[in-house]
Image (cartoon, protein in one colour):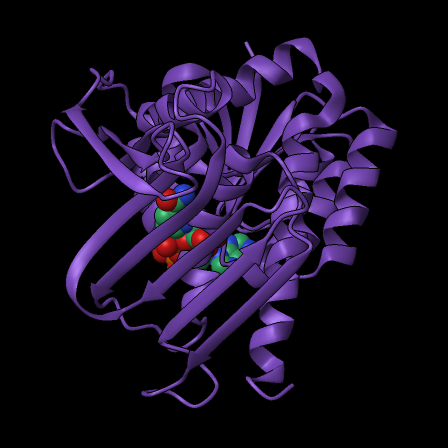
Length: 326
Ligand SMILES: NC(=O)c1ccc[n+]([C@@H]2O[C@H](COP(=O)([O-])OP(=O)(O)OC[C@H]3O[C@@H](n4cnc5c(N)ncnc54)[C@H](O)[C@@H]3O)[C@@H](O)[C@H]2O)c1
């Protein structure tokens, strides 16, 4: 069984610790905040607790390190862990610049270590269903994909809506489309805190001609967690706010009847929802990481996919910084 240590024991870190304690040998707990550390040290007395990350790096019996600290710290901590020969699970995004993520991927390849970013939604059975629909051709040629991640709150002051909300949808859109965008444009505005955009609209265009859009906002009347895929034959929606009908398939499409000489009409048929397993995405994600640790990095697929996400994020961020006239 893999021996795992975790740095970052805050809101999200607690969920990761719970899973890694169930699925592996939880050997180390690390946090710079004494209170957070002691709270979890009491709950998991069999793990060693420390504020000193070097102690995890120096433990030769430790196989893997899980990083759940704030985003700006990810790159440096992941770099140190890989250099110490550890497998690394790092919350999304592992780096804020494409060049930094490239360095992490290169290190993981050189050291033959797993580098897995925590793109939770990729382990959601509903998203897996969407991928199956896209890959099997059930929707016909995919024309466009768009994500809505909106709510009133939580209003952040340190990272904008692109960094805070966009990583989730971006990882899923790139996973579904399977291409890197050749155009990545973002517009937004900081209404409440200088320099921190509360509302961001993103546009992506892919070499195949597919297009994608993301609406990211914490200033919205409705809570939405939705992804729509428009195919030439059918359309599908993944709605994470739904309890039962997470995925809905619409037999709706453009239709060019024979003999009408290029006149487009639309076709409307059944609407149905396939059964989606109720498995916890976080558990599936942790299990996947441990399976990779057990059998080796497997072509570094997760690390390379993570690089594609950071690259697109970096470009969207630069576009946002340049502004609409840039
Ligand atoms: N996958 C998801 O759905 C999801 C959801 C929420 C958060 N996250 C990610 O999880 C990460 C943590 O978010 P959070 O909401 O738990 O934040 P948080 O602020 O609640 O927790 C961060 C913890 O890291 C500790 N910390 C900060 N810097 C440190 C350092 N240099 N060394 C050691 N400890 C340090 C803090 O003391 C704190 O306990 C972020 O990357 C965030 O994007 C992912």
